Length: 307
Image (tube, rainbow, N blue to C red; front, top):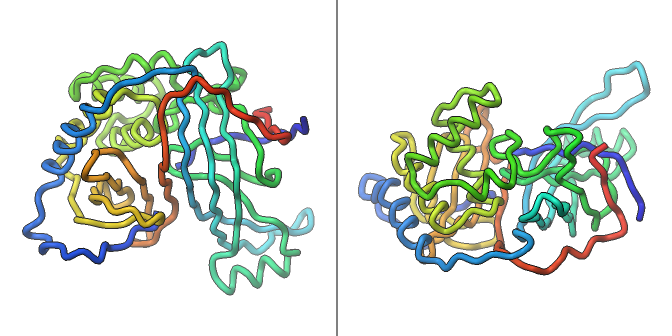
């Protein structure tokens, strides 16, 4: 199998209003009510197990790029990269975990960006980044390719991660199904890594756990209940994600939104927006399927290592 050295990082949906009539913002139920209802629905889902937690999704992220001769400062441009991916997280740490990128594309964002890109040679653009998703930056093979995620030689490259903090599979599987205790665990992880265990960190950690990691229905319910206790969360009404799915929009902060399916309580999508340019979407992840399986991933020929 072909091998290429590449760094693996954790990066962090373009949402549009649904055409369904929506009551004025002053008449919307609170975010707390929406999150508690989602918790009640999702915790009734039957628990399952298997060899791998298998999650399938699509992501988008914007990034900057620029190339030129050595010793020069090239002009930079902004581009949008999209990808379709699968995460195979092994239940046992004796087995490898994988990110499979099955489709990938990148295009300059604006006409001025395209002009710079073409002047520099119109080289192939690509990445696979999104909230809570292990991403591959820089020059990558053409899809399909796979990335081994559990490189124990470098903790910052290892998976799983919660809010950019390396944790073990055992720690994820042992999370308590209680909002107070799960908050304490997340705060402990933050202190262990030297981070401030504030509301922003807790929201980011909850997003990681809800979007890509193998948590039980009761743990996901506890995460929703934890988020429901934060004063800054806001219900923005009925919205649709880039895949056209309708859900309730919950704004955790000006830079982060969740889309939750009302009928099941499951997380559909996560959106990140620019803190400097309100309303500008910088990244999103849409989860299309997730669950336990005893099947094994079918790896493509191209394998990207974490060396």
